[in-house]
Image (tube, rainbow, N blue to C red; front, side, top):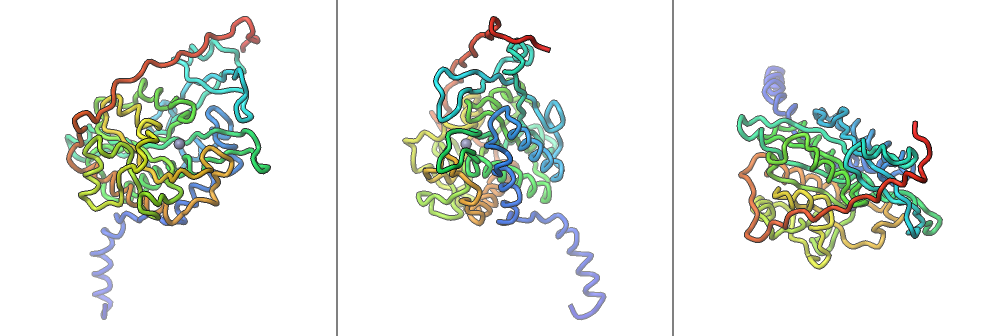
Length: 362
Ligand SMILES: [Zn+2]
């Protein structure tokens, strides 16, 4: 620009576009969220633990900073009733496990020292289209992990950097990009769930107590373990989708040129091994985006933040944001013939409360 007037006009004309621009995620963005979540101070984010509670507060703070609207029963938190049950045989240094119960009243029939409150963390951006805003796209990841257990090479904290602090980071960064960019046509709900490792506890509670009727959910993209590149998906910056062939989601992404391929390890049954399966069994087109390369740090103390490829993750997150944009603004997805999994299997019921052994409650 040669003259002051030209510079002024350029500023006036370009400023609105610049203000509404959607800034892509960088390695620094990833590190800022992932490192605290996978820090030793979070103690492996075991469901119902103080470390997991700390993580939930961190996530809610991020949702507030981004400008998501809260959708829990307590601000961003949807409280989930949990009980701790002793294990007959200790496993990997753990002597107890957590279970979901049917209500807070039922939880309170258990001895007080066995009661826990965990939370899902929920925030949303309302859609702008007068009709499509009543349809919901769910973007989620689980923020719990397996806590503290047997020591391996002197380390007993199972940090869960890849599993699934990486997915939570993606959910928050995609939410930030959407909040900064143009408003979606459909409503986009961003959720981080508890208790996935213990049997999809948070998702099961969410499905039984949805803040928006499940009949309004049209698509779910979950994000699991995107911290390390997978050579079978094409290496750094490339991702794969579980159950790719089951619905039109994968081909929609392919048509848009996104670096998302099919799951190259169908024998691992990843489609059925994370929160998405619970939504898929309810008829919602639900898949998981991942780059898990079967690394040996899976569910080990070695799943550390320092082993995460931040640049790879940032690229996958930016691809994920474009994918969610297609879900939020594009034509509705559908299952392929035979692609939708069957109805939910019967749930195991928790053992009866050991009343005779209970200590007085207060
Ligand atoms: Zn996981």
